[in-house]
View (cartoon, rainbow, N blue to C red):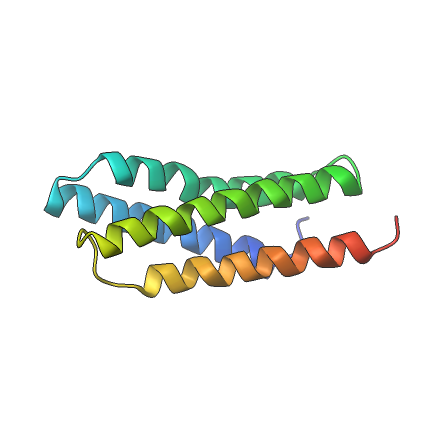
Amino acid sequence: MIVPSPLQDKSKAFALEIIRVCNEIKREKREGVLTNQLIRSGTSVGANIREAMYAHGKADFIAKLQIALKECSESEYWLGLLIESGYYEDSAILKQCTKVKRLLIASINTAKKKPV
């Protein structure tokens, strides 16, 4: 049984919101290049967090979370471009991304401090 994890829950909610936002932008603005990049990085965050739950030790766990953090940072970049270029106006998704990023940073720092 998997123990409920706020990080897993928030990253999945973020991925679902990314899918919704990207579909909306594609439908209304006919923009595909940036949204394709965003959908890849935005959904990858949760996938890497999920992989971390089945890591082969502490180093692998931290490495998976660091990959998730990189994908989250990339998503933040694509979201910023979409918002600043006028393709999308609601910055709530960017705030959601920042929350996931903060949780990832805190999780990585906690994991590094814990003894093996």
